[in-house]
Amino acid sequence: MKRTISILAIIWAFFCTFIILIIFIKGPQFTRLFGKLPSMIISPVYAGGDLNYVVEGDSLKIAVNKPVFEALIGESAKGFVQITFSGTGNLPQLIEQEIDYDKDLKPDFKLKINTIENKTEYLSISPNAGPLIVSSKVHDDWVVRIKVRNKKK
Amino acid sequence: MSDYFTTHKIGRSLLLALPMIILNFMLITRGNLNFSGSTDVIAFSITFLFFSYLFFMMLYSGKTDKYRATGFIVFAMFFAFTFIVNLIKIRGTNTFDNETILACEIPMCHIPAFMFIIPAVFTKTIIFPGNIGSITFMLIATVGMSIVLGRGICSWGCLFGGWDECASRITRKPVIKKVNAVFRWTSFAVLLIVVLWSAATLSPTYCWWLCPFKAVTEYEEVSSFSILLKTIVFSLLFAGLVIVLPILTKKRIQCATFCPMGAFLSLTNKINIFEIRIDKEKCNNCGTCSKICPTLSLSKTNIEETRPSITCTKCGKCIDVCSRHAIQYHIKGTSVIRNISLSRYLFLYPAFILLVIFAGAVIQHGIVLIINLITTGSML
Image (cartoon, rainbow over all chains, first blue to last red; front, top):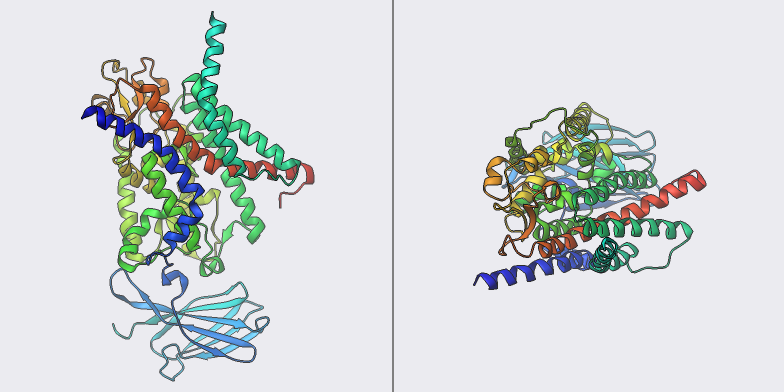
């Protein structure tokens, strides 16, 4: 028995070299395979959440995401909503927009963004809309995150 | 007669190193021999000869640690250098800001993997603002490496371990002569705190707040008080744990007492086939191994139990220093007194391949950048 275990251990140790090689040589295939697992998505805390609706204008497209109330278990009382402004060409120098993030047909906050000077003015209208978290250029778009309160909590 | 033995030893070592030399060639070229110019040929040749020499010398001299550490330290330095230069090429700076985070473009190393487990179970998502493809690959690589080498990753494949390894080798004698082995368990406390903190906040808190190696890679642009605080914290940790304390103690203090990934990988040492063992028959309890162990893994109790603690990184330093050859690489399930050379070869092959896979491309690229700097005055 001892001898069998010893031989099996040596065989396993020998294969360790090949395991290391396979992991790195076949890395891209493994990445594609494991990338399809349900847990392999970036948390909405970083990705910004799922798309809620899009408003398309002449020179500006506004993507309003669903509010993110991510918590380890259930939902948190506070979260954020992400708005992405995309230009059909370049981003306009001045973006002035009222946003209704919860689709209750009433504006929840108002944004005035100077994309050249990197200045954002924010006005909360709804009591559920909290302060501005971040307003930043991201590649060719402009992304804004506003703190919001979870109505269910 | 001695010439005969020397020639015989060189021939034997060359023969045993030959598969690795061929693998070195394949891994460093990545199967592509279309060099774009003489710079590439020079960079390839230096890298290939460097790694082939290190492995040959490991077999010829019978010593592991000196040659491993050389490759490991050079790798860490070149990694930081090439990483920063590449970021400056892409972003114009090695700092990141809101744009990088919102675009989910933060590069991920192997260290945050343990923080993802609890959030992944409960939220089915990865709590890191990076590219999902590279995160997936890094997770697969970390799991695979830990199955094969356990905590051996910390001495053979870690992107940053070479920094405190280097600092721990600067002085000939330690200024602080005794570091209590109990401090090896503090990294487990850090692991526990970071895991709970990450799960509670759904953020990679070690990366945001504690990782000292941001000092040699990338860090957040200081634009608020909290970011300033983070910058002070990681700078002090780098200065203290990676530079000053390793110089004073000749121990890898960051790896031994603070790194939560190291603590996490210690757990995988339990399921790993390779280990270090002490032959009680040969050991005279001189305590030299205990004194020189860079990760505080060999206490008196460990020597009595004939194996280091689970925090052992399999660097081979204790094996090299033991004058009675009482310590050796060992394959679990086999006899401690037999197959000593076989166990060492079977460990060295995957461990060294790991080093070459990570370090080969990095060092080659670093040499290209240095040659470009010398010949054109610019690396960018």
